[in-house]
Image 1 (cartoon, rainbow, N blue to C red):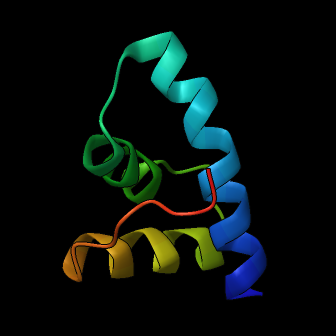
Image 2: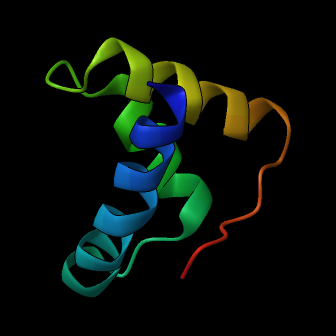
Image 3: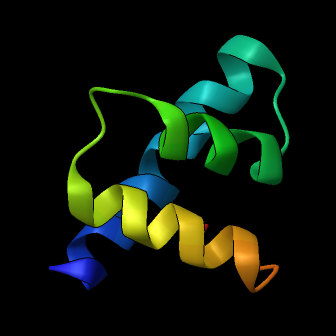
Length: 58
């Protein structure tokens, strides 16, 4: 499930980046604090923030 959450986070970043001109790290912070974000996606976003995760797959 974490792999699917990661895939969704990466896919949706392109929409956020175009709409808000937001960096990858800022996007991850927004995902992690959003009350509508699922638990798996929050865990993935928080992990990427802590490990300075690079965006891959795009």
